[in-house]
Length: 312
Image (cartoon, rainbow, N blue to C red; front, side, top):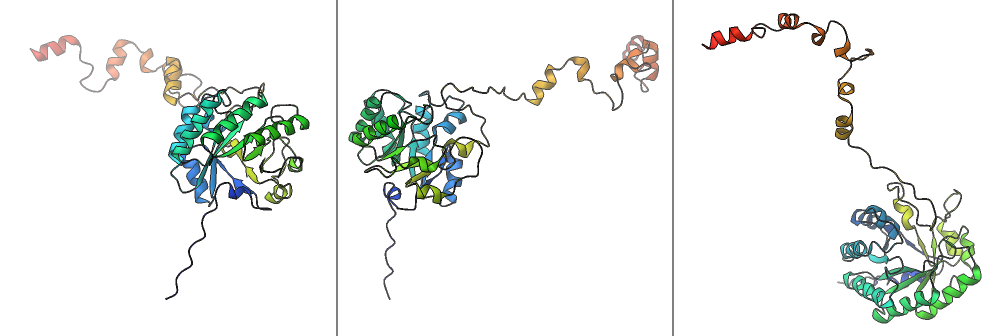
């Protein structure tokens, strides 16, 4: 009997970022159901998206309002068989120690990665957060995001300055969302020691989705879907600062619409009748009391005196 060869060990989350020509396709989930659906398709790793998580609970994205919801979702998904990375906005705090404590919580519940965005804040402050996280949880994969293209003017020099600072602080990967051309990530993608992340569908005018090979050619190590994975179901406002936020009133239940209608309008009108039934001449309401009694079924038109005599 020949011994069966041992199965190859599953690649680590960091190892999935270091496969030349084969970027990690990282889909984004916002609850247990969406994560289970993605895991059923065979994705080895799944990330959360702060935009969809905030929209699912009716809170704004990028306002540090969903820390508890993010930790609760990580607690739900961290024990699943896939690798989990958590989008934590800017760490939900400006204090590096608070961000490090959040990283410890996420690592404890099973997360293997975290995404931290600078929101165009001071690069030194964001670098301090990254350094605090790596000091607290060295094994946690930190993906450092800069918003110079997403909500800024796309200054390449500023982008490179920020990415250099984040890599020196210990970031394991860098992310520059907002690029409309995958080849635009070439100046910083693959820069040691941090692989870069690209969006699988860059924002901008509608265009066919770029194949993964395009991002592989641009040296991107990771492709994510972001909040777009939930967009067909959730009419949330955009997270770009200063952008208009559409306000949609909640749908009115049928019972509320019915009770709020005027009494006469609520009476059903036969098809083709321009007026309610009570307004037509000859109906029971427009007859005299004597005529009404005459049209009642047998025994219902008896007056009060007759009823009293019967009871006596």
